[in-house]
Amino acid sequence: MGERFENVPNHVAIIMDGNGRWAKKRLMPRTMGHKAGVDTIKKLAIHASKMGIKILTLYAFSTENWGRPQEEVAYLMNLPKIFFKEFLPQLMEYNIKLETIGDIQKLPQKTLEIVEETKLATAQNTGMILNFAINYGAHEEIITAVKSIAESVQQGEISPNEIDQDLMSRRLMTGYLGEWAEPDLMIRTSGELRLSNFLLWQLAYSEFYFTDVLFPDFKEYDFDQAIRSYNQRQRRYGKV
Ligand code: FPP
Image (cartoon, rainbow, N blue to C red; front, side, top):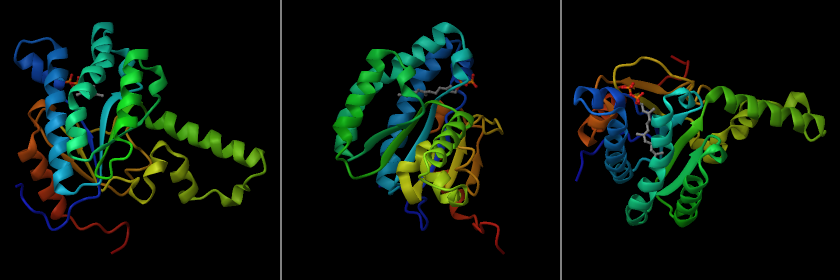
């Protein structure tokens, strides 16, 4: 049984960074870092679900990642195929539901099929939501939401005065998460201090946790450290 925390965040988001450097340190190709990262994802998803976290959002592939060497992109695009097949029994065992944000229609057909099948297979699970950001970028997300709101105005469904934070939040890709759409805690591994176009709207009041640990090495113990740090914070939301 893991450590018990007084304050378990509802929604944790992770920028899984440092796979390439992890592999390089071992004189292995970058793709081996992603492979190791996948094992970490499995461990963290189970651990987070046992802890009572309701949403775990993982940044797996950004709209900018298409610019990586073709071989690496191909590897990353294929990974979900193996991953979700292997992981499905545990998703069921731990009652975890798979969801995604980002434009997954751009994934290779086979990969898309596995993602859709896994979503369907886990749709009735009532425990933690494992929310993968795949081909996701916050700028694109915000533009898409703004366009959809503009269309609603043009159709006469709403007036510009009715555009508020709540409406915007619902039109974003995380809208389906309702009151839990905004992460309580955002973790970035590998020592980089950037947001890299991740959940720009939703992270407005989140607590941030940065660690030098490279993602493949970021296991249950390290996750607990982040939750412990979160437990020491006082969230004021702009108040005193
Ligand atoms: C960042 O490390 C990591 C990524 C860009 C990819 C993360 C993706 C996975 C771990 C797998 C996704 C799997 C599924 C099932 C959707 P980096 O390559 O930027 O590392 P570096 O900064 O050391 O080069």
